[in-house]
Amino acid sequence: MISVAAATEALLALVRAMPVEAVPLARAGGRVLAEPIRARHDQPPFPASAMDGYAVAADTVAPDDAFTVIGEAAAGHAFAGGCGPGQAVRIFTGAPLPPGATRVLIQEDVARDGDRITVTADPGDATHIRAAASDFEAGFALHPRRLNSRDVALAAAMGHADLSVRRAPEVAILMTGDELRAPGTALRPGEIVASNGYGLAAMLRAAGASPRLLPMARDTGESLAAALDMAAGADLVLTIGGASVGDHDLVAGAAGAAGMELAFHRVAMRPGKPLLAGRLGAAALVGLPGNPVSAMVCGVIFVLPMVRKMLGEDPTLPIETLPLAAPIPANGPREHYMRALRLPDGRCRVAERQDSALLSVLAASDRLVLRPPGDAARPEDDIVRTIPLPA
Ligand SMILES: Nc1nc2c(c(=O)[nH]1)N[C@H]1C(S)=C(S)[C@@H](COP(=O)(O)OP(=O)(O)OC[C@H]3O[C@@H](n4cnc5c(N)ncnc54)[C@H](O)[C@@H]3O)O[C@H]1N2
Ligand code: MOO
Image 1 (cartoon, rainbow, N blue to C red):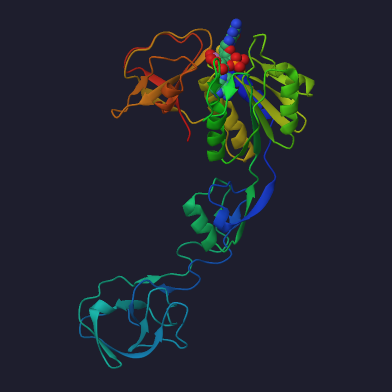
Image 2 (tube, rainbow, N blue to C red):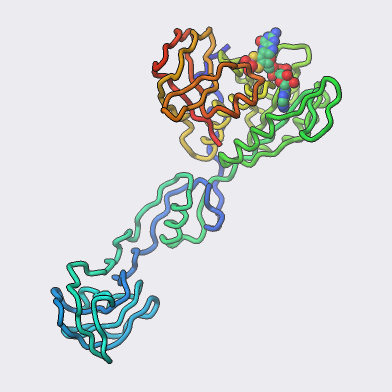
């Protein structure tokens, strides 16, 4: 059995960054920018009015000062001439400032009579001008990262219609087991509903991958071989179940027969001990344990970092330290990822029942408490390391 750290290293070595593809800006949200982009122009490209009012060429303005209105500037419609002493240009928000103008008087502070305006209130020191390039200069860079809605708005303002993003890795998910039925199907004696493949697909889609659920395989070499064939073209193949040591745990053998070069089988962790991994042609294959919580936890600890690396993101799992809401017992010889919840008081409550079949406990949790092998019993308020659970 290898450690979680050694398993993580071996798994990350099985994948690399995906090729780059161009997507229109409207579909770039949530994708990972692959290369830096640079602003094609200053923003704003010209000095612009921030308010509706009158542009004037005067450094100090006091009540009763008067100006002659000589023209108009609106957004998208610059005034053709300049603005000199004693002159004013009617101006609207976003309009280019006429050459010579030094400030904008807001219309609330002036009275207009024909082509004359008179200042009616102290306009203060604000110029109400947005200087050219005051948001960003031409050449300003947006660096590779997962694009949120603000980044998309910024990329648009920088003048980019299409963005180069990492192609979403295609992940084939194969649930295995004679006992499994699709959700919504009536169960016959001995059957259970297949669950964790759907959970993993949701987790991986939220992480930016493109999951593909394969038809479920039965516990026979032929059925597994046919299913693995259907995974062709995927960047990552996940099998679920049949990874342990029972007479019907055939995944390692079937993957080997399909040509997988084994990287490791079995990790010193709880849940997740029977995990196996290797290279299957151009794809990485990860054999997840069948227990629903084991499969989901291994998805968080191992598969998400692989997907992040494929997307060009930092694969490191985020760690949050929290005080314990109640004591916890000593840990055994395997690393333990305990299901837990952060309480409103900021402390962390570890679930009493840690059986790896309990999806209701996992769904009521928002994090995993990380226990090293042989970790001593911990008293209330002791600080523990936690891994927040993803979407
Ligand atoms: N003698 C030993 N027995 C077991 C060991 C061991 O070391 N020695 N390891 C245990 C551990 S730890 C785990 S985890 C399980 C996992 O084994 P498998 O990966 O072979 O999983 P299965 O036996 O196929 O299934 C386990 C359990 O999960 C249910 N299952 C399977 N697939 C799904 C699915 N897609 N959705 C929902 N539930 C699923 C399956 O019906 C079983 O109940 O092995 C222990 N045994
Ligand atoms: O390691 Mo198993 O995944 O404990 O249930």
